[in-house]
Image (cartoon, helix red, strand yellow):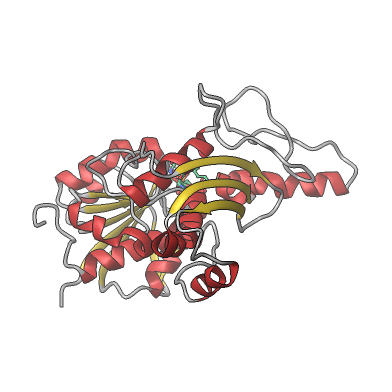
Length: 313
Ligand code: NAP
Ligand code: 3JN
């Protein structure tokens, strides 16, 4: 049986720490693991199945001898390092948006479009967390009755914005309860000029605003849904619109999804409830099904299908 040398890129982050846990529990035969991050965390000790592993600073040569990369260190880091990993023969499952809209990169939720994995060229993209949990619930309905239109409103947890942002919300809550002024340096978008507290608040902005008035998070939900379900990021066959809101909750994105089916004659609330009751993967957690678990599920499918190879397809 083939065993795999695995690297986790972004191993110290909110998603990366869950990637480690999911890999520990997965069916993938792991020969070795490498935990990669920036120079800030180099030397830090983490564990894999009880064995200490020292975090290493990422360089192109970190990927020598690696078969499988699970990446979650931000889009810029993926753009810089994943082509280097592929060049060295590794297959990469990327949790960032860096390659999601690349027509050569499959964007995969195994419950919906597992077969797209067959077309990979070394990089497979994991969708945005809000997209994943929505399409997993919509796909059985689409299969049974067809879909015409989707209107989604999200209620997204603090952890979706990363470990630092999540810490900031917890600190704000403590400050507020102590009667102090809340310190805001991250939400809604790190690096923007104006910041607002998330504790005891709702922020109707996730990621930057696009020209059309949608935020980038909303744009991702619209185009990723079309690419996953119809293999075309601009498909017209299903109309999709999204409104994304950050809520002061640690983990667990909520979504209210309005949809219209094609086959209205045969669809009913009872039939849809029955479909969802037996659909796999419908219960969601933004850091698990929305990120780490979906990434490891993709890696498990690649192993099962003998697709952990850049040349053999
Ligand atoms: P986080 O908690 O801020 O963690 C960021 C991770 O990236 C840390 O391990 C960090 O290492 C590492 N990193 C940062 N700069 C690096 C560099 N130059 N080289 C190598 N590693 C570097 O963020 P997170 O919430 O885990 O999210 C990480 C990324 O995952 C996001 O930026 C996003 O692209 C993606 N994500 C996807 C979803 C989804 O919807 N599927 C959800 C959340 C996040 P240090 O410890 O050294 O700083
Ligand atoms: O905010 C959330 O709840 C989900 C955030 C996802 C995210 C955060 C930073 C960068 C992404 C993503 O996966 O879409 C990215 C990214 O664009 O890579």
